[in-house]
Amino acid sequence: MSTGSSPEQMRGLYWVSWWIVHGFCRLYFRLEARGLENVPRRGPVIIASNHVSYLDPPVIGCLIPRVVNFLARDTLFRNPIFGAVLLKYQAVPVDRESGAAGLRAILDRLHTGGLIIVFPEGTRSLDGSLLSAKPGVGMTVLKSAAPVVPVRVLGSFESLGRHQWFPRPRKIIVCFGAAESFAAAREEAVTCTKPRLKQMYQQVADELMARIAALKG
Image 1 (cartoon, one colour):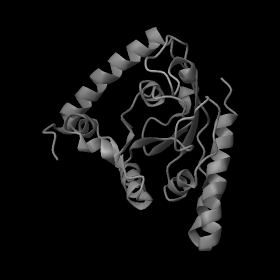
Image 2 (image 1 turned 180 degrees about the vertical axis):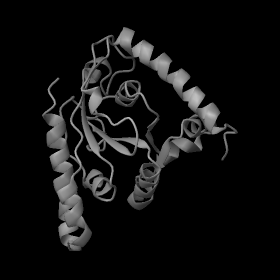
Image 3 (image 1 turned 180 degrees about the horizontal axis):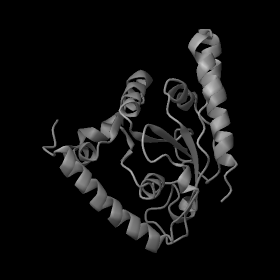
């Protein structure tokens, strides 16, 4: 499916939208970024964030001064209108039933120098608390060479929790932690056994979740 947009048109549309969302979030949510300098301005990057609200992707994305590749369920692309919008913004389709296909799509964007936002918990929290990380994010980290920036969003649950329909004007703070290379784990993953590799996926995911939890704002 083609959107008919050139890369230049896509970039222009992205930045017009970025400024609109950025301005709205700054005013309505009094959005504040802390540690934004930890996000590399070029090259592949994995942003790994907690997930408590539908607001999390846009409030993170509108703070980062570079094009962000968002993940979206592949079923969303089946809607002709919404699917066209997702394609126009270069969203990455992820099939939850086929982890391998989703991983390939993510790695393809990283290999071309893209920035990806992932949510290690895999789903939104029901009560705003942090959940356990899924091993899939550990697999993504170990199979890529991209630096990983832990992120914690504070206040988005109070604004738009899982059972709310409209965001309330609550202050939102996005904390960006120091980038981590996971160099030792990536080196071990090259030669370790398959059972050990599977174990490492969860260990890396847990370590990443601990780094997110340590960001207090």
